[in-house]
Image (cartoon, rainbow, N blue to C red; front, side, top):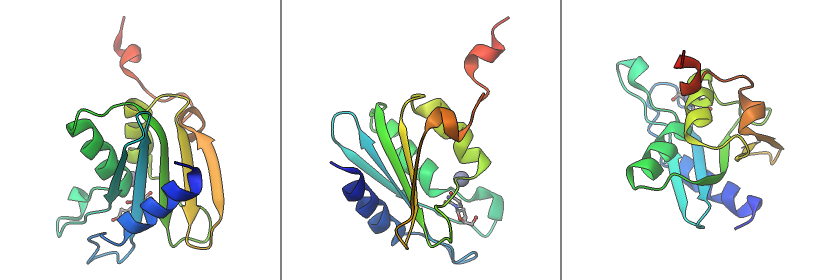
Length: 132
Ligand SMILES: O=c1ccn([C@H]2C[C@H](O)[C@@H](CO)O2)c(=O)[nH]1
Ligand SMILES: [Zn+2]
């Protein structure tokens, strides 16, 4: 699957966003190294802090199905610039993907920014930092 097809998967995931509060729909799609695709949307809650972002929904779906090898993640929203993942998602992506996993940020206008996980959160805190 190419990058444009993965972006289309992210757009279709975005349509399922549950966003009664922000009305801001986000979609994410993961391409696994075995070719499978996992999609996620943001899911909000009246207790706002319980909101799960699209990126984390997709990653948790994949991991909970035993799929952990992520080749690429695409994220889309109706933003002026390619949608920037929040800090929490950058941390989770850093832990659950590889440093070289492709991160494809885009918007409905078709702007695309491609970077690596390492570039998304340089110097991320990891389990190794807890070793003495
Ligand atoms: O990269 C992002 C940024 C924001 N959101 C969601 C969280 C919330 O539902 C809404 C507004 O922050 O957008 C995502 O899902 N991913
Ligand atoms: Zn987030």
